[in-house]
Amino acid sequence: MKIGFSLSNNQGFEDVQSVVQLATRAEELGFDSVWASDHVFNTGHVLARIGNRPYYEPLTILSYVAATTKSILLGTSVLVLPYHNPINLAKTAATLDVLSGGRLILGVGVGAIENEMEAMGSPFAERGAVTDEAIAIMKELWTQEDPEFQGRFHSFSGMKFSPKPLQKPHIPFLIGGASRAAIRRAARVGNGWHPTALPTEELSQGMRYLKEQAEAAGRDPSEIRVSVSAPMGNAREGRFSLGTEPGEILQKIRAYEGLGVDRMVISSNTRDARDLLPTMEMLAREVLPAFR
Image (tube, rainbow, N blue to C red; front, side):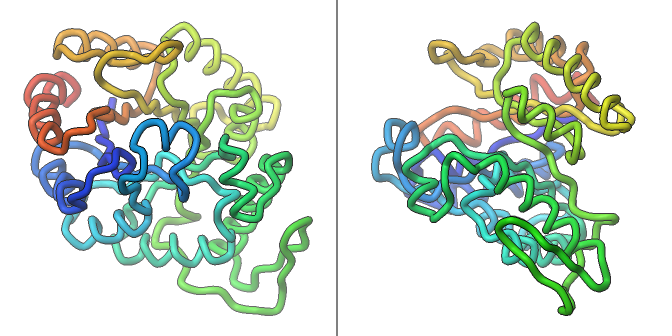
């Protein structure tokens, strides 16, 4: 079991340095990876959580972190693909992968906030189709010497594309979301499935469905790793949480490990920047040794 830590770029911290400096300490403490989240507007559940306080752009945060770290993996949990032009995103992500020495992991999803998506010029009802096409485009640009694509939303041919990612054949895609559609997408085109905060029984059911769908797609299910993003603290109604005490956190992570989960991405779930570093250091002291 690998353990990652959320940089909390989505928690409204006024001091952005308190966010990015977590990464260097996470690397020192032995975390596998650090992760950043994606929204553009403070609306819906984001507005309810942080009001008009800052929500920092994830790839910018990870680019800064790439320059201040050496080996820790850099993940998005998750990029909402309908917010991004896939050709431009392929360029940005490949550049970051090269700059970081091949450390980028792209967790991606379809999104869930309708007014935000419509403002970005992407029809909410077509978010699944937009996401599928975006993944196909990015793979084409990253892997083909002479990329060519004819799709519903984008078409191109006869042009070179660079840089290619350092990782081969391409930067890994983790498919976010807990819906059956998300699991089917992971089985078809993902390098992993990355749901958020599911109870173990629900996750187990999803993993069985993932295996079935992977086999139906002619893929080896073992090649589609499962990682889970889960917050600490007290659970909101209808949501799962790792809890607050080290013993409880460790017990719940072990339960995920028993299901075959490959990585746990932990969020401190705090609105106080002063809690970030002590929380991460507690995890490194009380939890990480059990999984080394």
